[in-house]
Each structure stands twice: as structure tokens, then as C-alpha cells.
Length: 118
Image 1 (cartoon, helix red, strand yellow):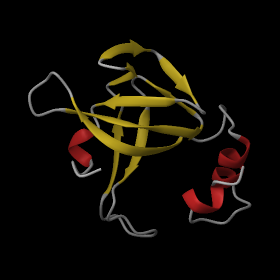
Image 2 (cartoon, helix red, strand yellow; image 1 turned 45 degrees about the horizontal axis):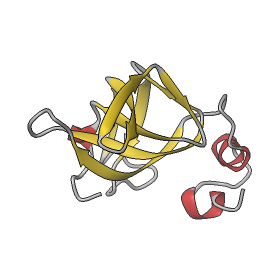
Image 3 (cartoon, helix red, strand yellow; image 1 turned 135 degrees about the vertical axis):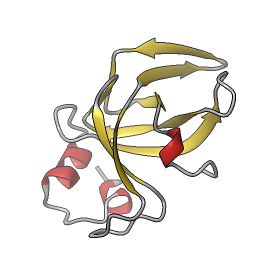
Image 4 (cartoon, helix red, strand yellow; image 1 turned 90 degrees about the horizontal axis):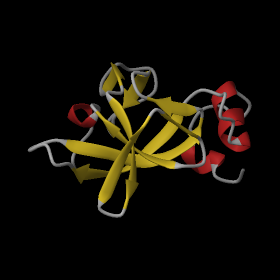
């Protein structure tokens, strides 16, 4: 509940802010990627982060806002599909169909659109 003001720059009464505040699995997907983790595929990374609202699913179309994105511009903004959603358990990874908010997840297929410095 208290994190929404730190995580979201938009109005605190819009659909996204309310979904983050309520941790709503049926709300829009709001996910913060905190780390890029090297995968077994050479040169590829898992985008690891926490889901604050919505549900991340394999094949889902997502809007990726990179670190240089500014509201209203199209710079550092991409719309792509998640190739796979993966749970990371220590050094093991397990593919899973979907992951609801409140959990951590690793995404495959979005690494090319995010900086490796996360």
C-alpha cells in the first residue's frame, strides 16, 4: 500500500496506481525489473523483478519502459511479447505459465530492450 507513491509517477487515483496499492492480480501488469541475471544462453539475460499488480504470463504483450523513458515520449519505449516466464529458485529455474502480483519473476525475451546495468 505504501509503495505506490515511490514506484509510480502518475496520478495516485488512476487505474495503475489503484492496482499497485491493492496488489490486484486482475489489474494492469506493473512490474519492476531490479536485476538482469545471466542465463545459460550465451549473451542472454533473465529480467528479474517483482510484480506489483497484474499477472505476467508467457506470450503476453508488455510495454517496456527503459531507464531513459520519460512520460509522453517514445524514446526507450517498446511493446514486445514475453517469451517465457520463469521462477528462480537459487541456481535453478523453472518455467511457469503465469505469475500473479506479489511474487518475483524472471522474464525471457525482454533483455534486449533493457540495460544490462540493472
